[in-house]
Image: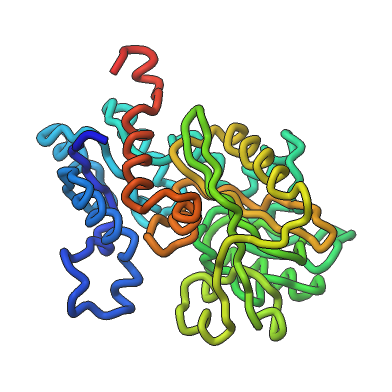
Length: 345
């Protein structure tokens, strides 16, 4: 694609250095995505600037006004420490008539709120675990009839934040204890859903109107299941020593029952459109031993590090990391935002 001016917006603490030489591996893990994206975009010939955005849009607005970038590459996952506020930054870009990469504000709103997302699933008859929401600020009152085991998590946090082995509960006492813990620690509503035993599958999607699906990916829990529940805890996803200890890894899903890939393709397209997603996303599923599929959630703007699942699944489809980022930039440049529909580009 043609050379573009790209403003990469990210959390200030994740501003990467220009080189990995001499950097501590733990530090690299924190800003690996930001480093990979910035360096690869530059290698692709784009003019790239990076801007940290914490709790104000003043500098963002002035930078856009002064530099007038072709596109803003969005790597924000929160604003002012609040995960659900990243959508407002993108809405701000829309009001500035500034093209950006990734998902639009409406899609971010629907997908970030896990309870709302599951309500959309239910309306569109997309199979998903049964669930109940426990709002913050109200006394925890358990329903009389519950089918254990159950899975407890924040209704808004992502990247497996707060998810641990204790998130799977087997009785009312532990359920109440875990709900109260999440309410206190995460200051958010709590989502309790039916725990689905089975394989964990991820499917990457990309596009605005026309969608591309990447190969089905699977999280292999190794020996973790022998000592606890096979769930994607924060450690299982991000702690390299923990992953090595239990042999946890991800790879292309193999030995899927006949017709599974086609069903996943249809479900992913329905989810993408039902939530109004744009840019790129990853759909998470559980598959029981009988082959039945359950949509867990949709992740708009998933992690983009070169060695993460989304980029690896794109590579398995024959798309290099550089090509992947260029495609994301192109989708941002051509997304038909409302201001374009009303006033033209």
